[in-house]
Every structure is written in C-alpha cells, then in structure tokens.
Image 1 (cartoon, rainbow, N blue to C red):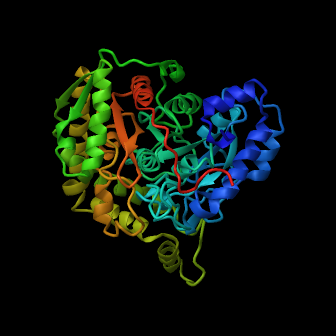
Image 2 (image 1 turned 120 degrees about the horizontal axis):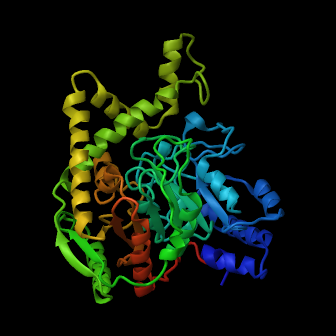
Image 3 (image 1 turned 90 degrees about the vertical axis):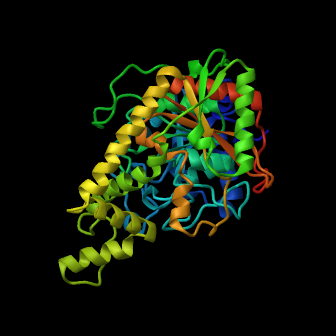
Length: 481
C-alpha cells in the first residue's frame, strides 16, 4: 500500500516507529499530487517549499509529520488566501487562523490551499472564480461544495486529511460525493477566528478525512475555546479518540419521517436504510420520529445566510485590500465596478437576496420570520435529543451529479435539504460513505447529535464504518503511475 493511501493514524504509527520520516511522507504526497492534480484540480496554492523546510525540522505532537490541506477561505500567514475569488486573488493574510495555529502546534505539515465555491457559496465547486475541481470517482462529476477541493484532495490521496468549512453542508455534502468522512462540529466548538466569514451564525470549520478515527484526531487538534472568537464556547474538551470504539448497544436512533418521505434517489434511500439495519442488528434501537419544522429549514437558511453574507461581504469595496477596478474616476463608481467585476454570479445573487431581505419594509416579513423559524427548528431538535442519542438521514438526496446538470440555482439549493437544518440548529453531524450506487458513485449517510455530542456521533459512525467495511477507492484517478 502506498503512503498516500494510508489514513492519518496509520501514517502516525509508521512515523512513530521510525519506519518512515516526515520528509519521506511529504515527498510521497507531493508525488501523488503531481500525478493527479492536473485532472482533479483540488488545489489553488501548493506550499512545497515551506512544507519541505518544516518536514526537515524536529516535529512533535499528535499530528507530527502528517501532510494536510487547508480550504482556501482559512487564513494562512504569508500564504495566499483567495476564497477562490477574483476579489482576493492576491490577498496574503498577515496571520494564521486559530485552527492553522493549532495544527502547527500538533506537528502537522500544510501541503497547500484547496479550491472552493467562491466565498464558500455553492454546492459543487462550479462557482469557483478560478476553475472547477473534479470528482476523483468520475471526472465528469462535481466533487460537491463548497469544500470540494478539500474532499477531492483526500479522496484522490493528494492529502492525508483536510480542513473545510460548513455553513449549510459544505463539509458533509462534498464528503458524501467523494466517498470520504466529513464532520461538522457543534457551532462554537471550533474557533472561527481567521475563517473568512460567509454567514457568521452558521459557519463552522471541521475535518475531512479518510476514516472516522482520523476525524477524531483532527477534531482533537482544532477544537477548544479561543478568546479571539466571541462565539467560541469555553467548556472542557474530551479526547475524541477515546470514543473510537465499537458499540451501539442500547443507543436510541431516530429516523425523521419528514426526510425519508421526501422524493429523492431510491438507491440513496435503500443504501442508507440498509446501513441503519446494520446498526439495529448491532444493538441500536431505531424508531421513526417527527421533525415537523424541517420543512422550513431550507427557506429559512436562504434568508439568513444571504442576509449575513450581504453584511459580511460589504467590506470588499476596493478601498482597503483586494481587487480594485481601475476604470472609474469617481469613488462611488469604483465601488460599483469593483464589486461587479470582482464577484461571481452566485455571490452577487446571494448578496442581492440578503440585501433585499434586510431592506426597509421587508426585514420583518423575511429576516425576522426566518429567525423565528430557526428557533422552532432548534427546539424540535432539542426535544428529540432528550429521547434519542442520534438522528440518521441521507447526507444528500442524490450522488454526485455531472457538471452543468444543476444549472438552475433553485435545484442546486434543494441539494442541501438534509444538511441545512443541522447548521440552522447549531448541532454536530458527520457524513460517512455507506455504499455505491449503480454508477459506481459513493453514497453518504448523515448522523446528527445534540449540542456537543461529537463523541457519541464518532462512536456510532466508527461502529457503522467497521460493520460496512467500505474499502472502495476512486478508480478514475487510479494508483501511482
């Protein structure tokens, strides 16, 4: 087995036993990147020189010598952070995000920055202002979004693990499409300091990995209170790797009937329900439950997220940093042309939606009602988690679709139907592969838990992972040449 095929915990074992050095591991991953990157295009920036220097230094910590990728909306000192936008094409932050600092302290090595939908707005990485990333399982298909580059890099063996961000499913949906594991932590469990804001009350950074044990390792490294983030929760942090043990005996699992009664891909539904049956056979108690407010989640999300985006993206005006239009002499005209030229269509669409929802006369009708719906959604989840340990649903209503297939933005928004409620409620959730469809594309299963129930989710996900023994790899990009 090639080094790039190993999960993080096995790479660490090899490094600890001195069977391989961090420099050798790093070289293996850059060779793999050179083999697949032209076809997959997961990366925007590679940091080979900095990574090489770091690999030659003495490294210590739980991730010592592990090569990771970082989504390109997470700040990295001295390394471009573009958000896949023309507006920030040459922006180099003067500081590291807290999560990057913590990975460095844990001994990790940064391979580079990965592609995304511009400013994390999209579900396919087709909205990148630079170029689309392709799915390693089928290069004619999207990898999902907005963390498509991170998920594709992990699936293709071009990173041992990666960080993504999740505002409405942007870690879990690409993880499902690319056949890897994606964990969205509880809102406030991982610092957002240094994450370029899309929708501040929804955004959360989390890991994308080859397996569940790796997700626990990365979560350990990045979670915890940060005084630099006012939404960061100050609470004792468990060692999440201690939850990586088999066993769901006695766990109560709910299947929301509102999700499973929807009209979506039958192969996805069949695969998810078959996986649930395996958990039931392993001792879990599975029951149908009701999540009545789920019907409001998508509508509420597409008011709240664009409204917050409209506010957050007002800072990109061509005055302080980033792209500036040179064709207008007047200041007001420069603002307009900078934003018109700098933002892509999807970002403009969401800014206009959000500005409208916040405008005088419409605030109460749209934004206030969306926030009221949000309260109902959170209360529904809270009630269920008093009785149930976990809820399970598909991660996505379909497997990966082809480029251009979702040309209608409304159809694209509907693809987030199972993931968005999690962000609205601020709860944790994980996506893991549970099978392949008839086209050979991965199917993702989503497990949701109560606030700060990441340990319980990881334990159930690890158990299911062992039961399913999903070992398939993307054939499209193949092994080493």
